[in-house]
Image (cartoon, rainbow, N blue to C red; front, side, top):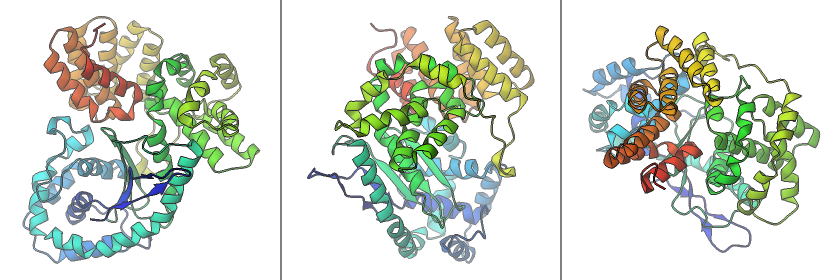
Length: 483
């Protein structure tokens, strides 16, 4: 109802882009209306200048909603008390994969839902009742002016940001047919949150109320939308530089996902460098920021920042220039440069809601992951085994044991540990790769249908991880091990 297609005309091209939308989602509205009625109070009272949440809560409080006690019990049982982003995020993940009301039928098989969405999928039957009993169709209609006003506030800045990104990357129109970038504005959630997701081949960003427009975050996800596919196209060139992942492994502040997927790390570094160039910050300031990002573990940011100066002086698009850009990386030079930089320590939680600090278990699992990357499988096994002796349900340790078993030709044991990982993990990377590895195990056994089930399950979330996405596409096309 509230789709505002960002008709972005590329300079010199007659066509317009229709693969970016800024709108509101009735599914997200319905899920969050139910949560607010059920006790979701995070961020209430914050001054955002946007009163819709309070008004909707007041209207719902006047209604007699028979299913409300069950909703309250459900939310209380599933609330993540020490992490407000994860608490909201699990319901955002579910809402993004629901069909329209009043059925709210999941758009993927229930067993293929991402782990956080699957954890709260029991909300669906309650949501169906709440939608009818609270007359959400009428309430949704009443709040339309509020959503239209917020869309209008974002529209021009987002359009400009997308246009400037396209101009910088020299992106030809029509390149991204079949893929879409959806920006959803949500007025019923805690303020100042931005939730990014990639499901299938589509990108999503859910933005909650804030006085300052979240345009930098919208641009960052859009740059991912534009650039994530390039490491797949130039996989051979990227692979030649992947030895640098060993350097990044030494960065305490770098997230595990980047340490596990070189393509993901490379793209994040390129995006950060593009942002520095697009913002036209003073050279000394930009170079200092690039060095700071390298100290955080984004080790290729300084290289890309310098290399983009030459890119800007020529006329090829990023899609064409990407190959020489990657071939220009000198692993020895980057390693030498990083030897001069002191890595930043792991960040401490900014607030009590940011989750617990890194534990001894986390450090041990990091050590085990590093040992796997070095091919020291026996030592890695011993490390993961020591973690599981204290915490038998540690997802990363279970996954580590599975990878060790897989690489030491113990497929039955690997299968057991990958299945255990799927039972307990809510980490998208671990879940995605567990499905991929299980698919490969079944392919090697000649169980093609079981393998395809695993690849399809992985395909829901694999696009966020370039190497996993390539593995899924390969597995869907041909059985693993086929020459």
